[in-house]
Length: 475
Ligand SMILES: NC(=O)C1=CN([C@@H]2O[C@H](COP(=O)(O)OP(=O)(O)OC[C@H]3O[C@@H](n4cnc5c(N)ncnc54)[C@H](O)[C@@H]3O)[C@@H](O)[C@H]2O)[C@H](O)CC1
Ligand SMILES: [K+]
Image (cartoon, rainbow, N blue to C red; front, side):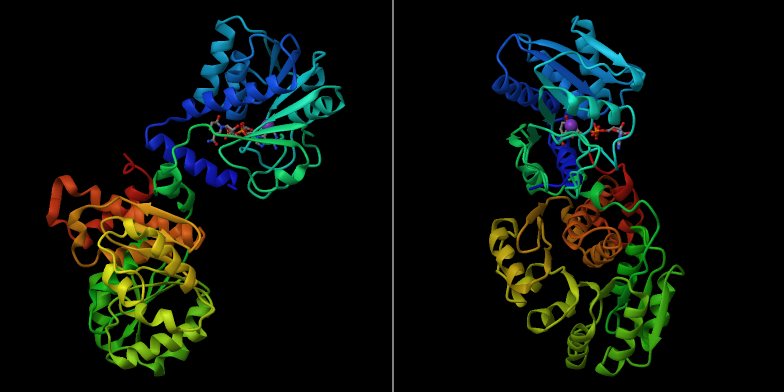
């Protein structure tokens, strides 16, 4: 099962892996034609009713595979208004090659030719809400016609993200959906074909630009709350600054008073909230939980906290009473396996930390992906295991991220990662935020490979987070 939204991400990843969308469209169109051949004999009349998006584009391709049928292609709207280049190219191919194509510019004059089969290609995963004109009138006409209806990808009007079907949507007899079933499609009662359109498995397995698109913030939002610092001061500062670079509105750092000034000194962009102590102890926990829950935002727990027994106990108590989302990193990780918590965690261990948490001891994380998946399932939290290749898993789904450079072995890059993931958690599910965050962090490093090489520092990478996240870093 795959949602329309996730499908768009996989599709973008396929293009990144060298299989562009136009190729997928060719396979989609071919699959539609095969189903038409299954439901009607050669010589039958077929009306293709196409919208101006890629759903229509799939059907333009299908027309070329149906030469032994009597096919009319109706485009809802003007050819100039076709929304994507690949759909337009496939429309142009029909026009040039003398196929019977018509543009419907007035919905009041929507005339469906007498036909045995209607190919419904008005709307696919690009739909939002009830059908608008001219699609609404066309859908009514299609439903009234005495023809077998074959819908492309989904019946027009069906929302592939949540499975809702618009009241004025098309009633399909057959649905040819692509790559994987969409949620709710099976319950419609139509005959369902899931067509393999040649998307490489790697487009789902590897984290690519599509995963970043899915989690990318479109607005500055979120106020992550970094609880860190004590023996170390750079780590919380890097995490908090990375969150700002990844779209957070404000970054708060709760830190021992003894180091708060130092942390603030690294950056005027941070809001540092000191507590009276040299390191985190259980006596601060109630206040921290209260503040975190009042902010109702994402916590980053761990950067620079150190390993003092009292600190560890404080982390345990924090997790026992906090119920919101948190990224857990560094010294706080060791506590997670034996704590009962209602919090939603993304744990970001490196290889050593993973092993200390009771996870697999792995030379290569990617080779141990299945074991890490089982470990995450037992833990009950998302795990982002970071190494040369990162493994991101929620215990059920697992993805591998390969972005990054050897220079990123330098201290501080993990702190950046925790801040990036915290910012992305504002908009995306934990698993998606972790996958996208891993890629963005790695791409930020790659962007400096040419100029700084293995001398790249974590602090250099801060400036590269925005282009890695919003564009320019996905080649
Ligand atoms: N890997 C893949 O997923 C592939 C999918 N293919 C096909 O592409 C469509 C999705 O195409 P897209 O261009 O994104 O969107 P649509 O064609 O579904 O529609 C966009 C079009 O519709 C207008 N619109 C939106 N909502 C409404 C509404 N309620 N009423 C009327 N009109 C509406 C919007 O303004 C746009 O103009 C997918 O389903 C597959 O069929 C690719 O072919 C290959 C790979
Ligand atoms: K459709």
